[in-house]
Length: 449
Image (cartoon, rainbow, N blue to C red; front, side, top):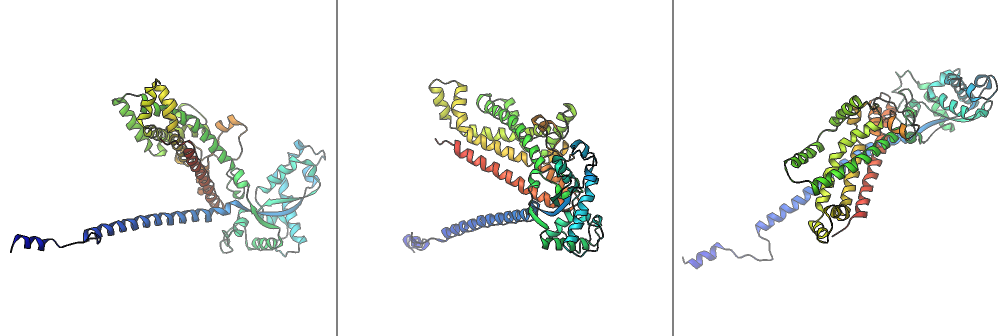
């Protein structure tokens, strides 16, 4: 056998237009990888849809509330015995004086509509009425004393059990051992619902209202907590942004490269990975126990969240400064600019989109934190009143949205569990808006070179 024959037998002829086995294996591996990627995206989207569906399904009911339309006769003999219509004198009548008026009016309404019932007086129907109804009627009368002596159409908050019954949260089987309501009350609700006296409407008080005690879940709202979160975010913004940007500019543009700056950089990276509850312990020790600032105040919460947010802002700002090409600095220095002028007039404007994005993402992260607020007492305070002014907004005890959601989730009444889900919806809307703002600002200030 000659050499030519052996070489010809060892190398089979192949065509350039047909893929060989090795190329086919590579193409098959690439297709599998694409399928794996699509499967991963599909799985992520599936779980996201399940999560959002669960949140919306459980929380959408918090944005609706059940009311009872009742004409209430404001008896002057009970509310204004002297007949002076003086709010100071009328304020001496507590909510205990208003409760019988509401209950008797509801009983009379049932009698006038000819609804058959086993109850003999208005006191038996108090299970249908929220415990906050008397206080709301009292506030309305004190705001307008001329209403005394008239019959006023009053929209009464229904009790949480009644609200839960119309939202399928409470069933006839589940109330067999419930001491607050019985089947006869639900029969009344069905009759009044058919008549139009009982109805559900949009619950604006859930967004603008304040928290309530465990006996009045139907009155609880998130408004005061939202204001507490706003004051905390203002503290974080006005402290974390200038300090973080200034520290980043110094470390990236002016600081010499030595062991000390390396030590600082390593610690900044480590602080970004520290659990948030550690910052809560630090805030408790530094701002409450040492500085004696008021507990549960948004100022303390903002200072604690500032410590937590600073590493994120420093890291994102340094990355944005480092992304600016060195040629920009060299060109500025070449035409006679000082080091500071080159940084503040050329480098910083080009890095601004990344700085703003990192800052807003850091604020969004701080907005959703609960663990640091646990340590400074913002979950132990029931935020029932709006602050009197700006100073009070920073210094008076308050709560925050994530802390309020956590507090509601702990309470026994299922109505609070529904409100916790509703609070999550509002919190997600805030986070979505902040991320959209970050995207808009990045595109607005973005410059290409």
